[in-house]
Image (cartoon, rainbow, N blue to C red):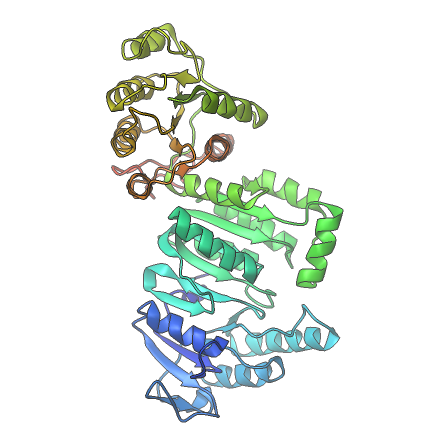
Length: 476
């Protein structure tokens, strides 16, 4: 599937439908390409202009003097087949069709979509879309979309059937400091479909987790086979909408495609080791954890908290998720007790009392990290008089590195950019409420169980806590 590389590392891009008018999609795409610092060649195509931004604008893509790898198509739907035919004759390798007016509409639109698929096959030119927001490749500073914000670079490859979900996800991810290796609005999926993208990202070295928002798929068998292959290499998280009858009806009106049996999707995800998210929070919390933290080896979560109530909430939610807490040994209890006042909880969740300072956190996390019965750690810190959040963040990172155990943090209701960025840069997910931290650990637990079931070695954490490619996909 390296033929899809053209969408993420093109040497040259042509914007067909480029315009100097601010606010028009053809102009926003130009702004994003230049604004992100894309260093490949950019060509403008529009018969109504001789130049844009002081650069030549060509009537047709066949008039561009140099070769073109990727075409971004922003023209009325009725002329899309013509411009794609021209792109094919130019030997363009890939095209992103942003234009709407295809199978999401009437029969004429469906016929038009079938026509562009024929053109794609005829010229061996892959097409993303139509009805796409565009494609973004953060590591290569290429934003070929009309999104108003660009996502940060990182290890998560994301694709979505809904362009609006993409824009919401980008805005959310920037606030949460989530990073992406690729960001794709797949639109109507006339040519490049879910299975194509899964196969591509499974072999992409910058990607450690694949995440997706999906309402329907055109080829369920192909998707199943792709998920089965890819899951052996990398974790996958999918938010499949249309779970309910009303949701499925809404999906049909949105995409113009049948959502299919939800139980069939659910069964396929379970068989292939896909973690199914039901909310946007779950999608990205699970993806962030799976992209950066090692899977759990066995069962037994330790919850370390300076806020008893938060520990109770986390415990209840862990029970709801069938995520087992560790039964702490006498040795571990005594080890923790040396660092805490007698009034600490003497159990798990490990309530180290509201006056816990950095030293107490450090000693308790060290004890928990070396406890063999503990397989994963959740650290909760609420803002109290003795709380130095940044110093606690440092010790979370230190003990996570020393133990090699999956670790997540919950800074309860706190926004502290310095501390969060410190942990994020070391691959440790930071949540604002305990339920989200438990969801992240649940995803790591399910991934570990599936790898064990399939007889696949667990990936190993690197020195900074993030995942290594070494060990991924090796069977015993």
